[in-house]
Amino acid sequence: MYDVIIIGVGVSGAASARELSRYKASVCVLEKEEDVCCGTSKANSAIVHAGYDAVPGSLMAKLNVKGNEMMEQLAKDLDFPFKRIGSLVICLNEEDMPALEELYERGVKNGVRGLQIVSGEEVRAMEPNITDQVYAALYAPTAGIVCPFNLNIALAENACENGVEFKFDTEVQSIVKIDGGYELETSRGKFQAKYVVNAAGVYADKFHNMVSEKKIHITPRRGDYCLLDKTAGDHVSRTIFSLPTKYGKGVLVTPTVHGNLLVGPTAIDIENKEGTNTTREGLDEVITKAGQNVKDLPMRQVITSFAGLRAHEDGSEFIIGEVEDAEGFIDCAGIESPGLTSCPAIGEMVAGILKEKMNLEEKENFIATRKGILDPDTLTKEERAELIKKEPAYGNIICRCESITEGEIIDAIRRPLGAKSLDGVKRRTRAGMGRCQSGFCSPRTMEILARELGVSMSDITKSGGKSRLVVGTNKDRI
Image (tube, rainbow, N blue to C red; front, side, top):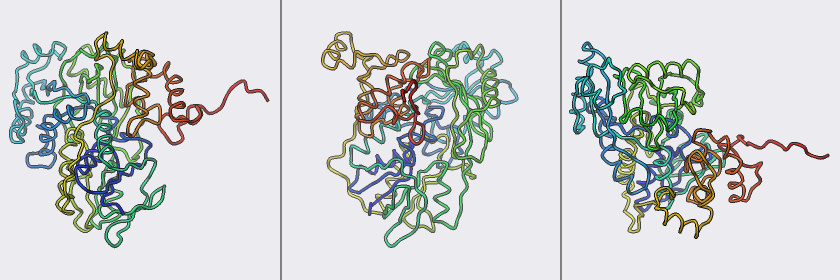
């Protein structure tokens, strides 16, 4: 029997696992997908929100601001990309100024530093491509951007290095209370734990409702996005928001940490908890609404589109804590935006609850840092030449669009919780994320995966499960 089982290894589950790994406890993470970061955490705006949007006094407000403050040091400790670029909420006319001023007041009450309302003229000076119709904007200098994949993977890798067990392709099917804890029936057998942390994203209501008479309901809220080529990456230098509505922060335009431009999302409530398909209507909405705030968007430079799901709980609030009628079952539910920003604080809160309940002692040998995959572009010519001399694989370019080498892909596969699929390599190295969207590098990456994992090319998948890419051979002789 484990001390703690965590269901789900998105950013909330991974952050909770990492914080729990500070203590003397046996912790296991169960994940239904084949890898880290396969759900909500892989498809979002990648924004570190300043914290002016959430209702003052709410858990969202508290954890947003705290998570924002923690992100910079966490990025240094765990070696993932993070930039504090600031954000602007655009107000297009004088009639909407009360709504902008309300956001400002919320931010001040929430403890957001440096907020100010700037005039349309000041906005245009800051961002030349903002619409000429801008009347004013809320400027939040503490807002930032992050790589959600690397954040999630870094948290999980560090937890693994500190002793947390991870079980992938392990779908939780039922949970029952037993003496001293819970038994979880999964697609790969039964697991028992004294405590359970429910960090299952859009499925968190399903598991909560298995153990509690007080039901919760989570609606998958689909968001469609367009990703533009790096040649469009400097169209704006800050994250540009619309004034928010009851459905969220609206369509944004933002640079990414890797130099692209991201536009989206929509906010469409659906029933299907796996409904991550884009629609023509959704993408048209993204393009139309983004153009209301930012002029001359080079939408012909879109290189891909995608959709993600937000876990919207009916109360529009994070649910974090022990379930009232299910002792030992800790909810981490309803983690929608600003969940990515809040995840360091969420992990700390979950671990704090369990530390107190279990009277946990801190480890003396906790490893607080982690080194990410080496990026040869950060080296001098001399250092790079020396690296290639020592490790020739770093001289072999596999992904031409992103200049990703064989050495980086090998590292991604051999690391703790290493990549096992094309998408696993893509999330860790960006091989396949460039202009051609893996059109050229897929076969080479598959060859490396097959070699490193000791399997056949026909066993390599795009994203685990039944997503095999090679389904047969042509020109076979009978």
